[in-house]
Image (cartoon, rainbow, N blue to C red; front, side, top):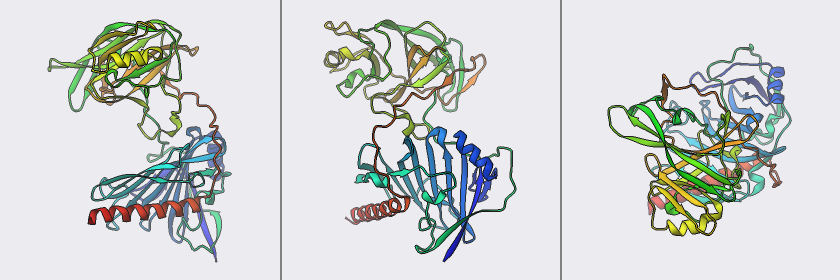
Length: 444
C-alpha cells in the first residue's frame, strides 16, 4: 500500500492551535539548511500531523518529535552532531497522558527520560510516575548514532513505522499546499542551548542595580580584593576547597604563569542590610573584555548542553576557590577539614588557594572566560548566579559583550551508526522494561 506523507516547511509549531507557524517554501528551507539556520519540518498523513523535525546545524542540533492522535508531542529525540555527518542521541523523552484534552508536556504525570553519552554504552534513565526511579541501562552505539541525512530525506529520522503506518506501506513524500509566511512569527523555535553569561561587567561596577522577584532590589557595592593568586603553571582550577581532590581538574584554557589579583563582587539588598558575594574574578589582563565563553575541563563538550545547562564546579561547604593545578594535592590536604576565606599556600610549588564565600551557599556554579578582541584571556569569573535572572535597572551599564562557544576538537570517536526505526524499537522495549520494573517495586 502506498501512503502519502505531506511535508510542510515552517519556522515552528503552535501546540495550542495545533498548526505550523511561519510556513516557508522548500527553497527557503533549503537555504536555512545550508546556512545552518533553524527551521522545522512537519510530516503529516492520514488526516493529521505525525512528526515535527527541528533542524539547526549551526547549533549542531536535530530534534525529532512524534505526535499522538491529538497532535501532541509525546516522544522526543534530541540529537547533536559531534562528528561530521554523525548524529549522537543526547536524550530521549516520552510523555503519557490520562485524557485526550490534557496538554502536551504536563508538569506532573508519566514521564520517561534517557540521557546518553557519546563515549559510553551506559545511559542514565529516569521514570517519574508516582515517584521517581533512577537507574542505568545499556544503549549500544548503533542505537544512539544516526547518519546525518541529505536535505529532504526526512524518513531517515522518522520512518513509516515511527509515524504510525504499517510496516509494508510504501511512503511517498509530497509538499503540502500552503501559503508562505515571510515574517518570522511568534512560535518560531530556537535550538536548546547552554547557559549564557549575564551582567558580568555590571557585577563588578558599584552602583549597578537589579530587580529580583523574590528578594527585591539589589545594589552592587565595590568589589573586594581577596588576595594575589600565584599560578606557577597557569593551569587554573575552580573548586570547593573543602572537598578539593584529584577529581578537580584544570580548565582546558590555561593562562600565562604569574601572579594575578582575585576580586570578589558584592551587593546588598535594598532595605535589608545584608548582601551576597555574586562572583569571583581572577583578573589576568587589565584590558576590556569583548567576549565570554564557558570554561570547560577535558572531556566536557558544550554541544551536549541542554537549555540553560552548564558545566560548573560543585560547592558543598559554602566556599569556592581558585588555585593552580600544581598545588592541588597539597592544598587539598591543607583544606581537608575546611578553611576560612583567604589564602592557603603550597610551599613546595608556591601555588596558593584563594577561598571565598560562595554566594548563597552550596550548589554548582559556572566559570566564564573573558577575552579581548585579539583572543587574549582577560579574566576568569566564577558566577554565583544570584542576579542571573534579575532585571537590570538604571544606571546599570548595558552588556555589549559577545558569547562564544569554546572551540571543540573533532570527535575522535567514529561510532557505528544505525537507523532510526531500530533505535526506536530498542528504546521502546527499554521503556516497557523500566516501567514494569518500577511497577514491581511499587507492588513490593
